[in-house]
Amino acid sequence: MESFFVLIMVVLLISILMTLVRALLGPTSFDRILSVNAVGTTIVVAVAVLGFLKGRPDFLDLALVYAMVNFVATIAILRFVERRDLG
Amino acid sequence: MMAWNDIVTIVLLSLGAFLALTGSLGMLRMPDFYSRLHPAGKNDSLGQLLILVGLCFQVEHWSHGGWLVASKLLLISLFLIVTAPTATHAITKAAWLDGLRPWRRPGDPQGDFGGNQEGDDV
Image (cartoon, rainbow over all chains, first blue to last red; front, side, top):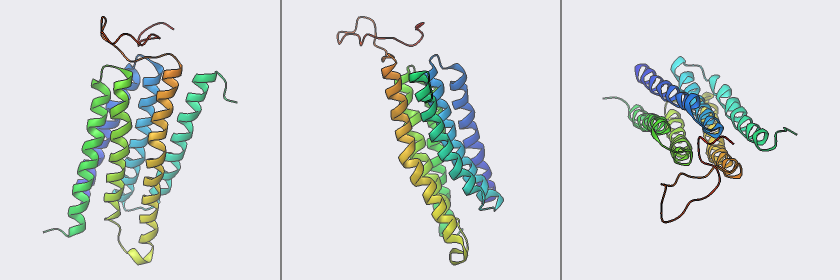
């Protein structure tokens, strides 16, 4: 089971790297915002799997907090791009 | 043979990881911003549900604190189900209001959308 979790982690990390390439390439800024949001969602899942791999259930709190931070950050970035002001 | 919960975990996690991988592959290969929304928004939204539900079957000592781990997993999954499609919609709306339009072949009989295309200097 441990080696299967390691395989899943490798697949998720490859997926994160490919999405980050789109963050570097993407001609518009919205491509980059989309890719960073997708990376954040995949990272949450990867942290949860890592917690089960290491046998520590505390990682799930970390995953929950980062899911919230990712969503709020995406909405804040979009608001800034739209209005040029965060207020 | 393995226990039944190991088999269920392996199947669900494999499906979820496959969806995540093809989602990121689509992000690289799709030609236009509006086409890239499909793999980025949909694949992660379903893949995370499958992976996190699959991890619920690996929880041990259910009555001695295992139920807390499973409820945290389902809480993360519920939060991502609500917010990941919402964030994708917000990105789409911001791009549309900024003037970005889908790509149409030049000379298409349905006509152009007007507005900016990718790669224009705004």
